[in-house]
Image (cartoon, rainbow, N blue to C red):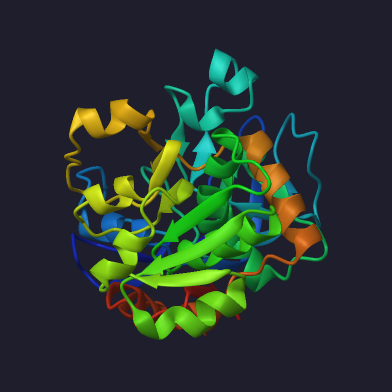
Length: 335
């Protein structure tokens, strides 16, 4: 059997049709017929080799939804016909302290879904059953796909850093990550403020569940929120002056990064010491957390806002993500 995909042949190239023989399934692997695949900014970084880890031809895609069609030796948790989701991670050692605690994403042998192996911009995907997750029936496939990366990325830090009901949370950046973070934050019972450089997103941010909105272009509004937040989740990819946001934290407050800015952070240590503030990060989520996120999203109506295009129009969809014109997640669909 031949797998049909779209691949980049060199850094920054457009994607072109690419076919390769289906490999024989090894121990614990499953073959998934891909129905939907979201497009993440990480896919753009991989296409362009921004992280110097790409190998060409490169088949991107790590927000995958599809149906199990074949199971390899030793597969016990999945069967043919199961609808599953796949995210950034495709493998880990399965035995270290991190894997044993469900934090597989921290395993030294963790492997991405579309680095060194073909990803989800294809009609088939093969990977370990441990990283293919049964999807609750309430989640529609096109909305579930972005949850597999964007969704777990913003859900995980709320749990990891034990943000509690009633706490005041700021979500910085209202895009593919931020629009989901607002929904999770509100549904978890946090007092949620959307913080954005795009004032035209205020109405939609409030509709998504934010209690209030702050435009970063208004310095007075930022200063007025000094000492206001227990937790600020930064989903932006731009490098900013982070001092105003640290000033917005209450004692013991945290500024948590899930968006990769590519820049450095310069904060006077005295600012952190005096009120016990901290800066932290969060890396997707392990298998245990992904299952919890999917159940929470299904039970509380958290939905990605998507625009769906046929897989054959992959370059048009990628262009919209590059140009920040997606509102808020592009999803490819196999016909």
